[in-house]
Image (tube, rainbow, N blue to C red):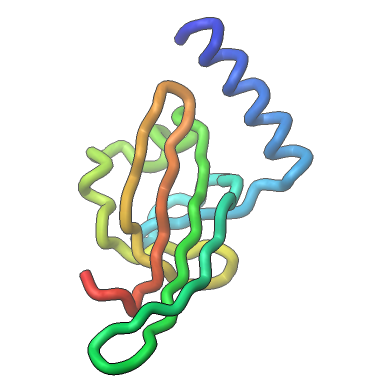
Length: 111
């Protein structure tokens, strides 16, 4: 890891202490402590009516992610996930040097 990555990881730990980490569980696997970031609620016109859409972004440290979810990221796409007491579907996973961002979407949304 670089000095910058080490610094970012240390700040993430502090932020998680202040903001509070919440559990994210994918496909019944291990719970990881994530900072649940942006939540989005919207409506879109779909097939003759309006359809409500919800999404949530979860940020996890790369070390916690790799310890709990060792398979390739693409293995978790489309899987059910639980966060904030709700069931979601994993829509995207973006991995960086220090963090993983998991984009969760409404399980009702078309695949």
